[in-house]
Length: 421
Image 1 (cartoon, rainbow, N blue to C red):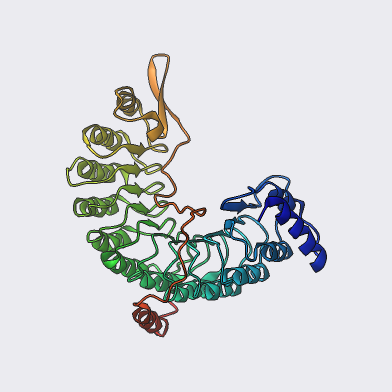
Image 2 (spheres, rainbow, N blue to C red):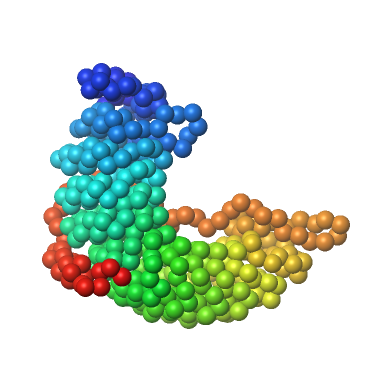
């Protein structure tokens, strides 16, 4: 549908439904391409725009019915509530739905909205990416999404960080990943976990030991301790697919770094490890520096920012980078960058061993002394990227052959007397 006709249709729908025209939506529709597939971007964190409400979503969905050009919707940082999600759910249930990516991060969606969305995805065979981070869907919403995954075998990316998920909903999602062969990227960071037993890590370890499709896992701000890391690495040592592991902002210390180092000797797939904002110190940096130089280690990118590492540990890491045949990116800002460390990283960069764009520090000299200045570069956010504008969108498929098994596992867990852990 041509951009001009889409904007005209939007005004007509608003008039019919007695909805006030949102200038932001109208201008965005006017700027859309005339042909080809594209993502309609309407993020609400742009200055001086009118954030989308549920009525705006209703009018927009009416315009997108039978539209094969819009394959992605970026609706981040708006004021969309459960009612708006109902309109989007109907759009997803359209027989000829073309949406492959839906970004609803940081809206006002709650458990009921997540339930409606999950229900619409049980029979959907086109949506590849769903981002719900920042919506307070809670335990109920998390369990509904886990239940959806036993039917949907198309979704490849799921982001539910900072969604107030509890232990039971985290475990339910992890259980569904045991045999799920579609999901490649999952973000469950920053849940509300009140138990210190880290039982979710046991389930996650068992999942990682058998999962063969997951490439990216974000476990930031989980309150994970060295005990949780030890449990997690048991499964990671047998995993052959995960390439990106995000453990930022946890409570990992030297002992946790030791378990990770031992895991890296066995794991031949992991390429990116984010340990920023932990407390591994010099001891942990020493363990990692030893494994980095091993021929068996496949790690390419490492972040140890803000880990209370002093000169001893940072110099060991600098030497490890120099000797490693695989590590190309390292991020160290927020540690104790004394002059010997500054000199070591200056030599790494000036020799060409460490590219300036592959670290977060830059050397400079003042009064004959070498310092490191911060460069605002960090690990890439994703290793697995979905092209929302692809032309070969998947067709709707039947439920996974393992759906019955998934359902049995999830049902057993949901009926468990320890559900309130």
